[in-house]
Length: 436
Ligand code: ATP
Ligand code: MG
Image (cartoon, rainbow, N blue to C red; front, side):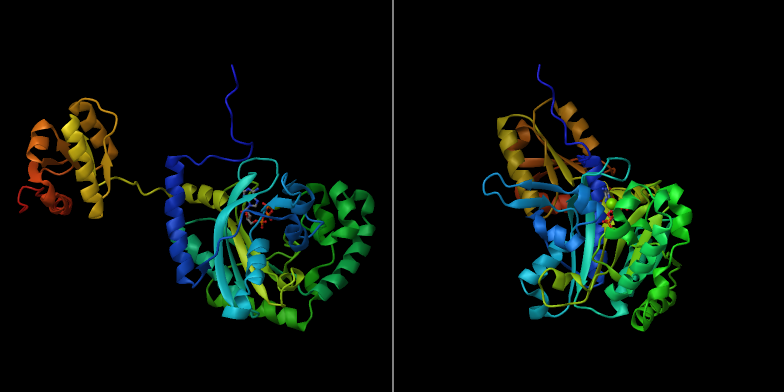
């Protein structure tokens, strides 16, 4: 016997009960994005591998060990399943001249991302992000907008126990000064560094500050702080962001060790974290990346953005009471016999044409069992079509939730009658006093 096939490890099916929660969540998110003036953009899931190497950086976890890269068997192109959205979004903006032609852009996207990590709670190999990118904005106002808009979404969703950490990574020059001091300092503790630390000492020492290894905490705690190397402009930018956060009443903590796992960031970086999800507590992360557009071959443009992990957000949302809005049809159509079935199709289509949601019973069975299905569907009304009704070209309209009596109506009066019953349903009277 052949083995049944399974989904790829770390890549999840999202089944209907769960997917309805996702859709409810996505509706809330879409309204929220529009209320801040962000517009959708959709990029391919597969991109040329060099895009991510150039954008994210060769010496990052993502590029070193997490990318699904492969050679196109047909033409030998080097391709990668996108591990994140910023690189693709910026590539698309450059390719289509968006900023030059249309001025600064506020953009958002959502969809699956792929990283070959060890699957665990809150960490998957296919996961989903909602990302936003603001291209062509230089000032601290957009950095603050991003953080403030996150706070509003947490509020809209009723999330609890979410806190904000911010930091400034300064400019490339400031980071270079800090880097030199950091290397000198870390060299003094070289024998205590772990394997990752030794490897990164000269290639990406900033990332060592971000280590999760408990044995290294005292070393990184006492390391030179980037904050002490910031010049006036970087400091003013960071201060201005903080003033706007304070005006908005958003509490935050400055975390000097917040460096982010991608190389393209400068100046403001931030993470939203929760204590409710165990080790995978970062639900949203982002910051400014002024160098990326030119790094990818575009005319220099300042930019900033963030991405949130949908699986982690949904896990937190559910903990805080988030749920699916139950999707129920307005009517469920039961029928018996050939002529009745044909009329049932016409009746259901007529109702859909008037904007009602109709589920047509398929698969036969007794009236009794069909009525059970109608009840279980949550529909407010059953349409009942037997041989008598079919012969008369009429349809039985049976309220399932109120006290109204069943009535028989001709097909051309059906939509009106259904509207009547649905409308009266909310009152106590049922459909009895409705005029047809
Ligand atoms: P982490 O430190 O948890 O690995 P990261 O810094 O690699 O996160 P980003 O690249 O900033 O993550 O992605 C933004 C958000 O996407 C994260 O804050 C997280 O919520 C989510 N995310 C990242 N990787 C995964 C994953 N493998 N599975 C689920 N969600 C993820
Ligand atoms: Mg990661």
